[in-house]
Length: 70
Image (cartoon, rainbow, N blue to C red; front, side):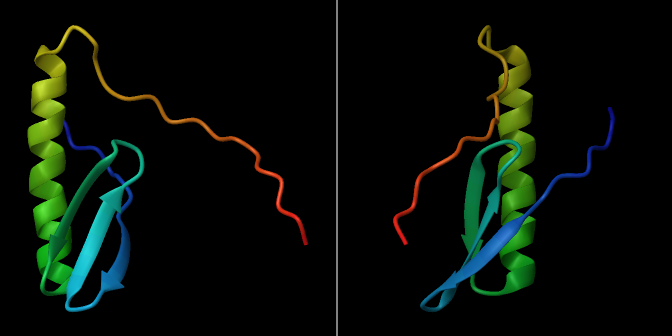
């Protein structure tokens, strides 16, 4: 078992905090910031455990450029 440091991007939607892990692609929510992060951690750990058993492996993250008209 290893530990990996991941990113949580959090924003508020009405009464909920929505947390997303951009490295993995998991998303969760909670009524408080702490709950959102705890739920994201659980969802991410479950996803990563399942991904180890999948023949397709984990998701890939990349960047792209978009043209924005000023």
